[in-house]
Length: 436
Image (tube, rainbow, N blue to C red; front, side):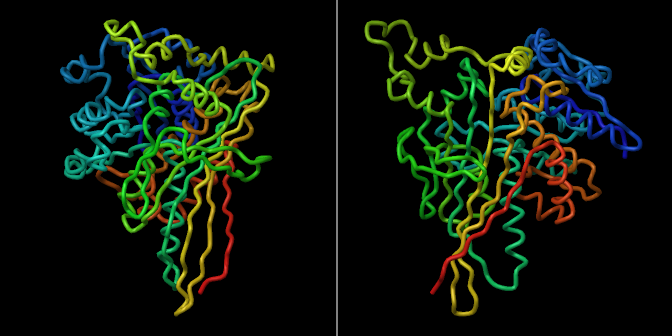
């Protein structure tokens, strides 16, 4: 295996986990190893996010720039940092996806990102990710771009893709009538602790959720159409609410025959956001009497709400038992119609991931990660690493659900085994009902 060189744009809660995992995975190789380049606009993040990553720092370098645009417009000035790069990773905001993709093409490197810009009317009209505009360029250059990596989206898509590939290999016809994805984000803490950026969460959760029903894209009001859902291995039912994430667009693109695709999220952090919404504190309207200030209620709340804690503070909270417990779970429920001659059988299959060993991260290089950033970073790292080291060469823009069909069962089993090593549990449950 040749030496790997990872170039990260942006450093944060997820990317620091992802980089550490890539470092560990690369270190297992008999030869090659890896080096890292982190492009940062604020050097203070280095100490905050890498306080427990001593060995990773030994093979890392940092490129400081006031604006990423300086690099996008003058790539030749940064050759010494980017030459021989294996992959460029956008760990910053989705607005930089295309510019970093073009930079990867310039330096003949692969590309990966963690999210897409979906909270706009444009994607609702096109039902396509911005990254797909460079599909042909990556194919022509024999390079791959892995998009929307992580745990959800990411591993959820991959598990769904694996099951669908399995159905295609069955001797009887299996039709997927509906896919529903349920997320649980639950934390027990003495103080208010966010597992993700509150300002980003406010933007996402105040956006009218979209879903597919009878092949038509429909939208509902935020925090409406709620359900009670019982997550596997979690005590009691949880109120879950429709949410719009990358999975909905990605799965519909990959499997256009599936007529219904929905997504829900629940947990105590979501309940807090629901309360803000019901108090009209996520409104984009201007405050009465302050129309000329250009500051909406939503903007003010984003400014005054407590920010996400840095990893060193999170580690302190765990050590002092301020954070008592935390759990993340993602479930994909597939409703199936199986044709056995003239007889049809209806059944449900559940596949998912569970991370409930959060407190075990203390005194590890991952101390300070949140219960969401840890599985997200691990899922992204494993998917990227095993795609890069596999002998099969994949070109173009590739969502996670397409990987099982491209790489096969052995690759999937290897990746799932690695997830369990990182204490991310996997489950597969089936139920069957009588048909006609």
